[in-house]
Image (tube, rainbow, N blue to C red):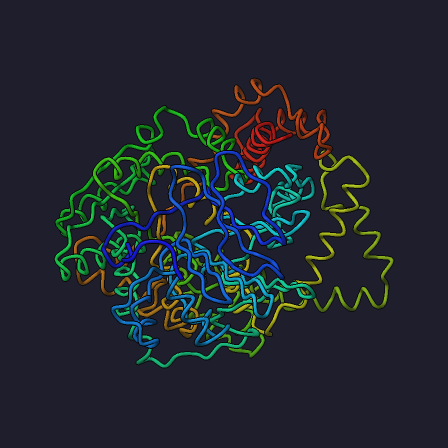
Length: 639
């Protein structure tokens, strides 16, 4: 039997109902009722665990399906549903995305997971094997969290919903809060609440009576090994980008965050082309104009929209925010989220997205992911140095010089030492010293502690942070593969910050009734770009060469073949310096973090006052913002 709509809303060209206010519980008996939630049983067995789906009254709920021995909950959009239906012989069959997943699992078993393409959270209960499978889409656009309770496991796309469960603790994760200050995120599964864990992007959490394991079901480089593409295969880039964009177009009227950068312009051009090929409405371009002339891209934004013929909304930065400040709105937004805000620019982009929503947009596309997948990591220099390929290092440096506003000497110093010799020599030197004179490492750690004095004043928490640091170092040392280039590329797949940012986008834009999607995070496109040989990414001798050539042909007068990347660090740093002092006075110190034992109130106050007395760089600004941000967030969430 099945439940849900007879027709897929994705196929009908409307946005599937995204419901954050639902939870699934695997329990041996009917769970405790949650206020204002309707609960229904999905699985039928009474001898083993049962699967229950609860959703808030009056709001949407995810698709679900159930068979004799399996039950499925699917929230999101299944991009390749039609292809799966053809393989399964279900063309024309009634049902929803969950029905297709159920049929696929009954046919392929766990091999189905690697076939799925889309943005989704998926929960599958196999009663016959007494196994629960919890999946998050390959790149983590959709979140999925879980918590253990007395008689089972509860899951949701929303941390807030889990915390509303009467048996889930709201205690904050003090170690995660402390590590946040050092930009260290050692555990991919943890959140800022002790009881709540995340299913990592591209992973399956498998739970049974005697098993609890998490593993990747999608990986472009399993075990760190890459099957590099041939030149003719790389030439499929345009085809893969078009497909990624088309998948997003199926979800409703589309807007595009149009900056003047290569990534968003390439998405805009592909989106318009695909929309017109399918006789769909032109997408709406949405542009944010930064106030400083040296980082404003308004001229390029307007020129691109005009040449493409796109309807265009241009909004000055402070108009989008709603006031002439950056930091205060960011901190206010942070306090409403289930994790401290990662992206200080988000209030401005949220205001821009609302303009799109007022004009009927249901989906907003971005160029996010272009920096991760279209560029060459400078750590390629270490691999080239290891093979004595100094000609390759010179070529890499020349490409970087053409693409960035940095001096030749600065680029080659970085390539030869920071990204070349240093990562090759220091681990070996550390290993030698550790075996010959381990006392020197202990002495160095006592003299140059990486934990500042104002952080983690309690001995127990400080000890835990040191244990987490060692845990992180051990895991890093076991990183798969010998290529430093591949290890660095994998960070976009495995780093907790990427997952935090995706979860942040999901939360913020869902509130406005929008879905934020990133074609450059499409699984098939990422697989192609991950396996593209590095210097093929720099086609034409500049970074992001795969998109530069086509954009230069389309916009010959805008100089995309010569464009260098603009950075807004100075704007961010000056905003923090100009705006932080009154916010700090209003907070009257980091009292909540001090009560939690995360910081020493007096020492952190001295540090903030010192940093605020003179204009600082981006690093100082980041430290000040982190304290203000985390204190405001903790006050809103402490029990």
